[in-house]
Amino acid sequence: CWLNSSAHNTPFPLSVLLQVGFFPSECVELINDKVPQSVTNSVPKPVSKKHGKLITFLRTFMKSRPTKQKLKQRGILKERVFGCDLGEHLLNSGHDVPQVLKSCTEFIEKHGIVDGIYRLSGIASNIQKLRHEFDSEQIPDLTKDIYIQDIHCVGSLCKLYFRELPNPLLTYQLYEKFSDAVSAATDEERLVKIHDVIQQLPPPHYR
Image: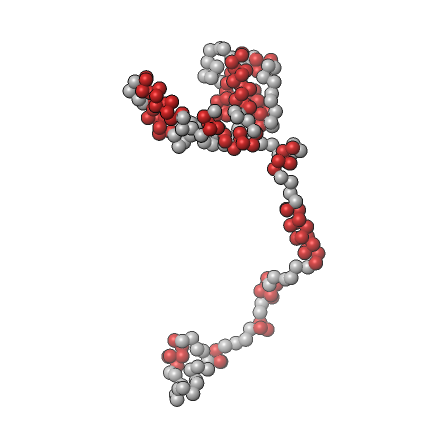
């Protein structure tokens, strides 16, 4: 309309019309009656009353999900022990030190005065059995004959726990400082530096 308004005495050349995106009417075709069936089928349809009730139910169900604490109380949800961040595990369990380490070290101090307690490996099946019990939030009876006769499996379990920590006990962040500390020239200097770095550990790791 603007191009053919009274402000212009003569129509614009075709080249100008094409540049501004104007096309003659014979180049335009209405396609309302020629829309393919596949396109019409893909157009979203209003939600039926039946589906509306289902969606409402699902929303209500998601909002009324029990809390993590309630799932733990019912025994449905178990906290991971192995492979879990140390700080997160202690926060969830409410302990100052992981129960697996407390139980194992107490057992080793009482029964494990043998050569290579942390060097020799225990029987793999005994280690996995202990791991499963601790992961199931149970405290296994380490005085059973199976463990007394294979004391090294308890030491191996301690090493397994530390090995699977996502962030090592001495932490990735302090690795360089620990490395420098143990490389000190004298024993006295080494001791001072290691003591200084240990003080920088996060509280769960420090304990």
